[in-house]
Image 1 (cartoon, rainbow, N blue to C red):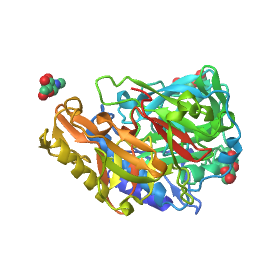
Image 2: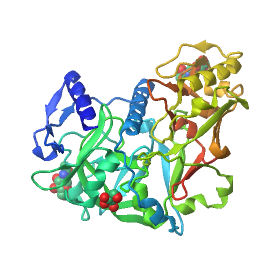
Image 3: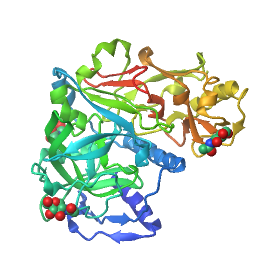
Image 4: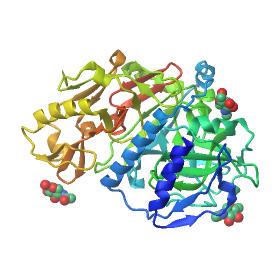
Length: 461
Ligand SMILES: *[C@@H]1O[C@H](CO)[C@@H](O)[C@H](O)[C@H]1NC(C)=O
Ligand SMILES: *[C@@H]1O[C@H](CO)[C@@H](O)[C@H](O)[C@H]1NC(C)=O
Ligand SMILES: *[C@@H]1O[C@H](CO)[C@@H](O)[C@H](O)[C@H]1NC(C)=O
C-alpha cells in the first residue's frame, strides 16, 4: 500500500506544474522500512462547483473505495461492537445535515464545534472512512480555501496531541491503512489519510472537546489536526468519519449513545438546495415511533474489510419488472456510502437497467449524448420527466429495498439535459456502490450493533 501511494505521489509530482517543497522535517512521513518521503504541495486554484468536477471527484472516491477493498491490511479493530451493544443512550443526539453543494461538493455536511471555547465547522460526513480530521492552523504545508475560519488549536484550552507510543497512534494503521509517522522533534504522532490520487490530509493526531449540540459534547474526541490538506472536499473544513473502526466518530460516541446512527440526506442540485436533513447518533435513533417503517438487510461481513458497510443487492426492478440479469451478476462487493454521489453498478447490471429505463422513457423524451460518467441522457428536466419515470427499486437480501423516485433516478446536469443517475463501474473487480443521490430523502439506519442496515421512505425533503 505504501508503495502504491508512493508511486501515485511520484506520478503526481511529475505532472504538477507548481511544487512547493515542504521543508519542515516535522511532517515527514516515516516509513517502517526506514524510507522517508518528502511531502510536496501542489498549488491549485479553487473553483466553483461544476458537474464535471464533481464527476471526476466521484470517480476518485470510487477508486479510493476500491483501493480499500483491495488492501489486505484493512483490519477492523474488534471490540467496539460488543462493548457498546448493551448501551442504549437515553435519547439520540440529532444534528441538522445539509447538501454541501454550497461548499462545491456533492457530499453532505453537518456543523460541529471543536475545542474550548468551541469553534464551529462545516464537516463532510463520510461512511467510507474512519478517521475524522479538519484543517488546522498553522497549516504548515497547505490548507485549501474553506468557508469557516481555520481551527486554531492554540486558542483551545483543551487541545492536545498524542505521542507516537500511544494506542491511538497505533490504531491509525487500521483506520487509514497508512503507517503513522512520528515527528522527530516533538515525538508527536502524525497521521496520513489518503482518499485518491490527489486527495489526502496529513497532520497531527489530536484530541479535543467535540460539541455536537450545545448540550451534547464528547470531552476527548480523537481526530486529525491537518497541516497539509488537498482534494475532494470542496470548501468544507474536513471530514467526520463514520466507518466501523475504533477511531471513527461513531465508535467514539458509541459508549455513550450505542453503536448505531441514522441519517436522511435532503435533495441536492435542485432550486432549493438549502433543505435540511439530519444525522442522528445512537441506538435509540432507530427505535423511535417511526422504526416500524424501517426494512432491514444484514450487513455482510468481509474478512478484514469491516470498516466499510457492505450489504447484499439481490435484484433491480424497473416499473416492478426485474431487469433480467443473472443473479450471479449481483454477487460482487456492495458498499453503501455517503461519500459517493452516483451509484455504481457492474457493467452487465448497469446495461440492463439502462435498457429497461430507456425503453420506457424514450417514447416521450428524446435522447441526448452522455456527459462524463453518465451515458444515458434525455432532453427534459427532472420535473417534466417525473410523470413518465418508472419506479426503480434496488432490492436487498431479506427484502429491504430502496424505492427510487424521479429525484433519485434522474439528475439534471444542465438546463434541459437530464441523465440517468447511475454509472457502470469500469475496470476489473466489479463492485456496487450505493451512492448518496439514490439515498436522498430516504431514512437510512446503520444498526452497527446488530449488524444491519434499514431503509424507510419519507425521511426528509
Ligand atoms: C492562534 O491563536 C494564538 C493564541 O491565541 C495566536 O497567538 C495566533 O496568532 C493564532 N494564529 C493564527 C494564525 O491566527
Ligand atoms: C483500537 O484497536 C486496536 C486493536 O485492537 C488497539 O491496538 C488500539 O489500542 C485501539 N485503539 C483505541 C484508541 O482504543
Ligand atoms: C431552461 O429551459 C427552459 C425551457 O427549455 C427555459 O424556459 C428556461 O428559461 C431555461 N432556463 C435557464 C436558466 O436557462
